[in-house]
Image 1 (cartoon, rainbow, N blue to C red):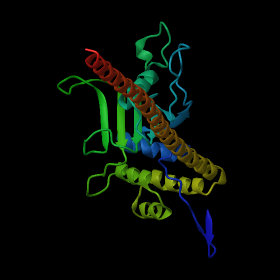
Image 2: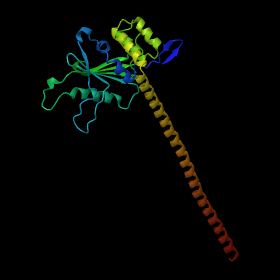
Image 3: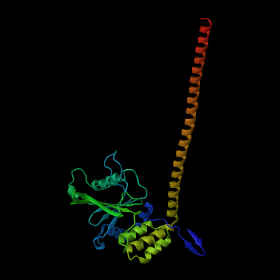
Image 4: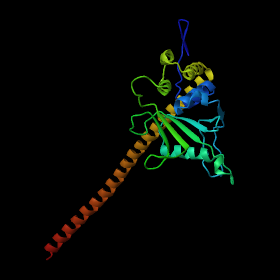
Length: 285
């Protein structure tokens, strides 16, 4: 935070950072409107959206512990996970399916009826493209090869921030897309000037407060520092490997050259000995 001529210039923490979205989603108005806009569920049908433990239940010691960013429960007991991911990881699609399946099976205990299983929805907000589709928002369910729905018990949403919304009148989800991509206070003010979405207005207010909070600002800076340190460390390891490879190559070259020199020297000496022997035999022949 800087001050210029009595005015506070805020350095915005983008909403796309996972710890930031967690803080913003503490606001129930933000939660309700975001879920409504992503799922296309009327607000009147969402009486409450409760925050719950982000750690998935682990049945066995050797099972992977599923740690999710934000877990919510609707008033009809539908479970929702919201996850923000800035960088693509290996086996990303398999990872999302694993966590969705784990969330679905987490409440069932041995001997319990399958009817107690609750609908689970995963919303993954991605700062990278996972395919060449034009649409930034895609929904996946269990369907047969003809597209007929088998069951809606599992539902996966992907929101890709690198892709652009269709031109024309922005939808409520388009406005959230713009909010996640906002990098400056000016961009926030521009979004606020034309939106009528109460959830986005509340999110902007929360985001500004977060950006002015010393604790979260420090956490944000430490995350950026850790990222830069990892990049520097990776570069150091790479350059050290290249240097070591060059040194090993030179050493191997010297060794091979020495061995080849000795071999050539021996061959030269052998040829000289043969010539001397041949001359001797001719002289005494």
